[in-house]
Length: 177
Image (cartoon, rainbow, N blue to C red; front, side, top):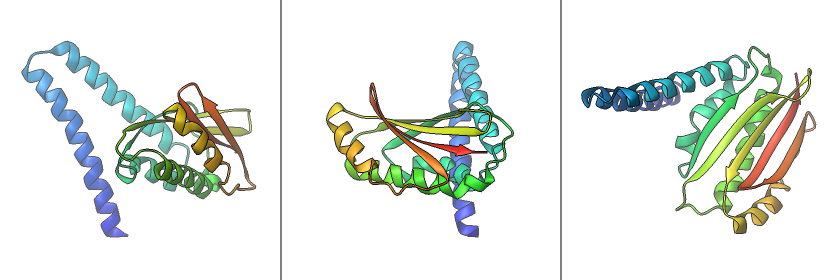
C-alpha cells in the first residue's frame, strides 16, 4: 500500500512540475499573456480537484487522479458542479462501474489513438447526483462500444445511463445522496 501511495504522489508531483515549468518558460520568454492564461488553467484544474475532494469519494478520487496513467491512450478532463456532498456510500460503485466502462473502451478502441474523455458531475435532482463519462470516438467505433457497454453488470443502487453523443459515447450513473 505504501509503495502505491508513493507512486501516486510521484506522478502527481511530476504533473505539477510539468505545469509549473511551462509557466516558468513563458516567464523566461516574457510572454505574460500566456503566463496568465496557463496560471488560470492551473488554478481552475486544482479548483475542480478541490470540488472532487469535497464529494467524499476517496477511492473514486484516486481512480480519477490515476486515470491518465492507468489508461495510456485516454486523457481525462472533468467538471464538478456540486460541492460538499457526502457520497461516500457510493464510492465503490463509482469506481467499479466506471472502471468496467473504461476497460471495455480500452478493449475496443484503437490503442494507437489518443481519446478525449470528459467527466461531468452534477445534481440531477435534490436527492440525486449524475456522473457522466463521455468518450470521443469515431462513428465506426460507437456501435461496437454501445453493444459492449450494455453488458456491464448493473449495480442496483445506481441507475445506469448509456447514450450516443454527437462525437462518441456517454456512460453515466445516477446515484442517490
